[in-house]
Length: 419
Image 1: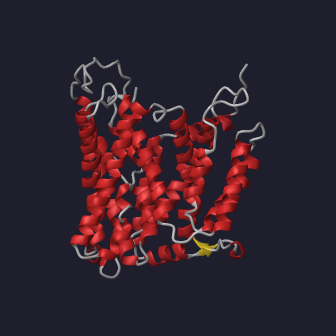
Image 2: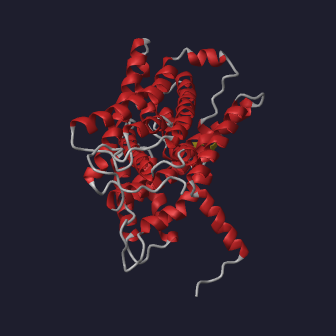
Image 3: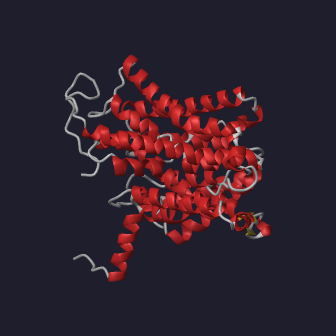
């Protein structure tokens, strides 16, 4: 007989379930970003700037960081832990397990990163601002939570395989973004600290696979790994990804379910309710009310470069590579999905938001380019989502052929998003 839940326990379970929904994550991100924009452009904007610059933490451990830095380096590691867990699950038991099935979205992800970077580079060079080239990776990222939230809301009635395609593409996109951050946005590396991080990661990996993988043992080791990674000079969020990737994605010790499911279920609500909204609040507060205002930010080439990369670069990269691959190779899209479905999906990959804002923080030393790039991320992500939403509804209402992916065989019956 199953134990009866108390009213408080049932309420907590409902809240946790709501926080795992993609729509909840998207709404909280929007609210946090809007609140930051309003405060940063209100008569009290100086108090917002002061809060972001407030330093807290133990100086002895080199952790006397600003509130904004804690949000980017600390809280965002929680989000990247969930990304790491998702990556592990998709590689071992999900859509990345079958190379033939995963090939098209993986190649689309590569095109969806290369083209936006090319657009960015072309714009800043044409505008005569070579010093801004350090931000080339800003429009290359995709926000998994936001993109899937838009698809869940406006893609009802479309084949569920479209969500799998977008999830696979976004997960690979995030993996490549993580590699970019580790390789291109790490100035110096402290080898002893990096060795400490690797030792802590090894201890975490052994413990998380054992019979004694209790949270009160895992969390202190994870914190040590994060701190050592932070001290090493490699961005601390990389520790979150690596920790998540160490969680076993197949059942161990006779358990019925993989531990990736349990960790994802336990950590995602914290990522959705705390880490992502607080990071968005700390990063999206671009002031256009003071100084030269919007005109000064718009004069920065990075604004057009980032926004153009997110909207046009992503659209051309994802759609172009997919169309090319499915025409000149034997690779095909999943059953029930055609090139027509990928127009709104390609636009959704232009919702950069979280990771794009993080890379913006790492790209520039001057406030003018940083603020212009942040504003461009918000504008580009917003435009991409607004263009994708009606196209998703239009696509869902259109009739579908019996062989939508054009592989010469009748498509198998497809579940629908929202069913």
